[in-house]
Length: 574
Image (cartoon, rainbow, N blue to C red; front, side, top):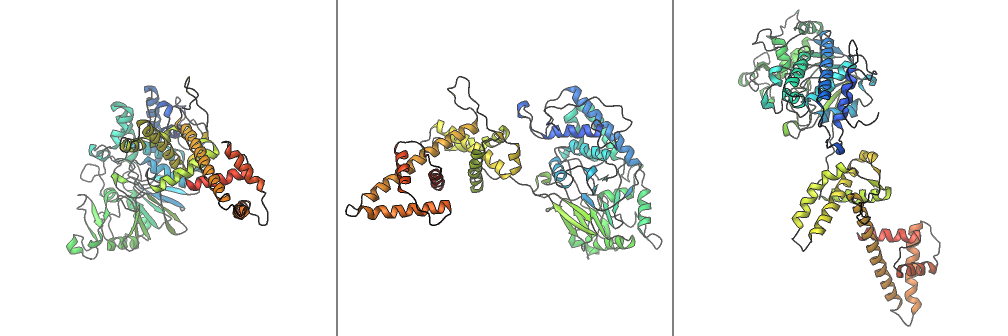
C-alpha cells in the first residue's frame, strides 16, 4: 500500500454489516485501520507529528466518527450473541490492561500478529481496561473494535472495571476516555462517539476459559457468598452456567445500583490478598473461607491462596489469569503458582513498569515481555561511538537521514553548544557549527541504534541554495562536507609528518646511508604483507617514491593500497 499523506475517508458503502469482511478494503473496519495507519505516521511537510491526527477538515472528522459508531454497533451485536463466559481454544495470546497505550499495542501487533489476525494461527484474549489514563484511549479501542469486527472468532474482548461510564468519564484520570473523544471530535460529536462505544462495553463478556482449564477474567474469582458452593455446585459447567446468568446488556454493573450484578462486580473488581495476609486470616481481615473486604479499593473483595485453591479444585481448573493491577515486570506469578497477574501497558502513569503478555499453548503458560530500545544519551560514550560508526556507514552508502530525526536531536545539541559558547574562546559561528554537527551525528546515532530506520533512508541529494554560491543548506550534507575536508586536512598533516620522519631517518647516518633505509623498507614490506594478507611478496621501492611525490605535490593519494593505509592511519588518529 502507498504511504498515506493525508486522512482520506470515503463515504460509507451500503453494507448490511461491517464485520466478517477482513479482505474487503472498503468495509468500515478496514477504513478505520487505514485511518489509524495515517494517525501513526509523521508528516513533517504538513507539520503533523507521529501518533497525532493533525489538522483535519470537519467533514473528515464526521466521517471518521461515523465509521467508529458503525463498527461499535456491529461489535455490540456480535457480543450480544456471545455467552458471558467464552470458551477459547489454544494457542491463545492473553493481554492485560492497555489503558490507552497505543504504542505498546502496535508493538504487540508487530511482534505477535504482523500478518494480521485473520491469518494468525492463534486466538487473542484481552482482559479489559482498554481506556483511561493513557494518551490514546480512543485509538486503542478503535483498533480493537475494528479487529473484532473483522475477525469475530479470533479475538475476545472482556470487560474491565474501566469499561463503565462512571469510570471512563472521571476527569481526574487525566485524560479519561470521554476527554479523549471530545479532544478529537469536539464536545457534541465526541460525546456521541463515547456513548456509542460504551454501549458496546455494556455487552462485553465477563470471563473466558482457555482449553477448559485456565480461568481468565479482569479482576479475580468471585467470593463464596456471591457464587454459592456445595456438593452440587461444582464443575466447569456449573461455573459457566452461573456466569452466563449475568444480564447480557449491563449498563450499570454496580450491585448498589438498580440492575447491578454482584457476580459481575466481583469478576471486574476483586484483587488477591497481599502476601502477608495469607495464613493470617484473623489479623488481616480475610475470613476462614479465604475472602475479605477490599480495603484498598473500597469495594468488592480480596481473596487469599486458600480461596483460590478451593475455587480451582471445585470447578476443575488449573490456573487463574487476571489483570487489574500494575506489575513491575509486566507479570507476576502468585499464590502457589496458581495465579498470574498480567499487565500490558509499560510506563503506566509515569512508572517504570514493563509490558507483557501470555502465550497459552500445549498445556504451558509462556510469558512474553516487550523490550523497548531507548535512545542513548546524546553525550554518552555509547552514543558517540554509535554516531562515529553510523557517520562512516552513512558516508560510505551516501544516505541522508530524514529531517524528523535531525529535528529531534537538534535541541539538546544546541543547548550543549550554547553552554560552551563564551567559555573557552569559542566563537558563535563555531558554536553553531558544532551544534549542527552534533545534532546531525545524534540523528545518525539514533538511526544506527535502530537498524530498521536504514530501510527508510533515501539516497543523498545535492540541495543548493539559490544564489548562495553553491553551498549546501542541508545539515547532513554540510556535516559530510566538513568531515571530508577535515579528513583531507588530517591526511595531509599525517603524510607530511610521516615523510618528515622518513627523511630524518634516511639522513641520520651519513656513513651508512643504506643502513637506515633498509629498516624502513622492511617496515614497508611488513605493512604491505599485513594489508594484502600474503606472505613472501616483495615490495618495490618505486611505490614509496610514488607516494612521496604525490604527497609532496599536495594532491590526494592515487594508489588504492596507499589510500587504504592512509585511511586506516587517519581513523586510528581520530
